[in-house]
Amino acid sequence: MSFETAPTKTIEVNGTSFAYREAGEKSGVPVIFLHHLTAVLDDWDPRVVDGFAAKHHVIAFDNRGVGASGGATPATVEEMARDAVAFIRALGLSKVDLLGFSLGGFVAQAIVQEQPDLVRKLIIAGSGPAGGEGISNMGAVLQDALAKAGAAGKHPKNFLFFSQTGNGQAAANAFLARLNERKNDRDAAISNATIGAQLTAIHAWGQAEPSKLSAIHHPVLVVNGDDDVMAPTINSFELARLLPNAQLSIFPDAGHGGIFQYHDVFVQQALDFLR
Image (cartoon, rainbow, N blue to C red):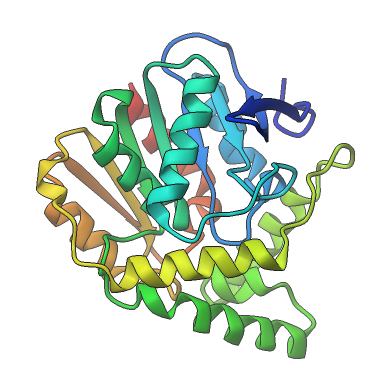
């Protein structure tokens, strides 16, 4: 079953309904997708999900207060991580791999620090460590992109996720078209309250003391574009430097959404890493 047609399911987690979709054969260690600021289930690139699902059981979900999930979105990364762990445990899973993109990359770091035995391997894309350079400016970057997008009649992701070159913008338009492939059973929109809570959490993460990443001995694949305006690319180099068992992949002429621009290459790298 492709991600485009995967039904949206719900599960009760501590009295709150969490929405999720899954793809791929239910065998081996599942890969949990942790999504970005403002994202709902329909913001995952179906080529990335289906690429992973060719070899793995993939589960994408809306964390508390996001999209079709109930409850109020917490305003700290650590609480988001606890909610994610509760969701994973509610599914009866005892070992998972994590793909954290942007805010999801912060949440992935918090999960592996809180519950190291739950995680086998991590992929951290378009993200950075606590206290990372420029992370706390993400809200301002978002506002700037919203203004530019409004003036240009484009989507904010044209400015936030992709380089402004011809290549980058062609990739942006192709990505946005893929996000619209699903016609039925689309997710609920993100609420302003959730965006506000997420921005508060991101700002606090950007201002936080660096965490003890040297204690994370899990294999980690760190991925980004070479010109990320949301989580500046230097943060990916820093993650790879601080994590003792990390590999780094930087895509050329690409931004925050490098994993979507180079989805074929990224999926192959990810499958090799998870193998």
